Image 1 (cartoon, rainbow, N blue to C red):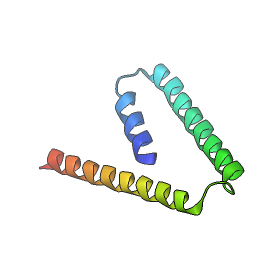
Image 2: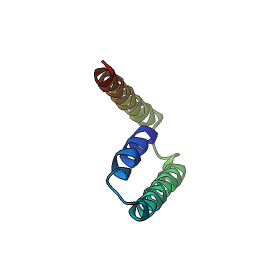
Image 3: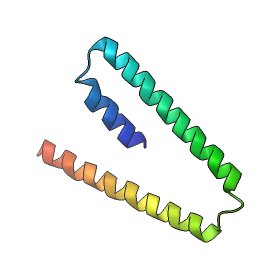
Image 4: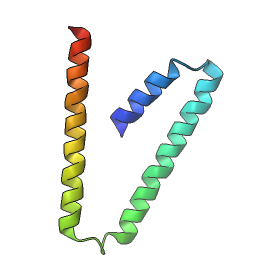
Length: 82
């Protein structure tokens, strides 16, 4: 989420005027806060009903996605440098 948010903010900021970028950044920060708080609240409400094995798989799949995305960014950054 942090990598994606940083990339989105940086890429989109270049196409906006200063006045537009303020509202854009406020919107992104607000949406991120609402999403994170909503997910945290939902997890805390349902954590006793979710099997440990399912949580393990969710964490494993999420970790694989982050690692693959990080490798992709590293490779693309290397292409840009060389």
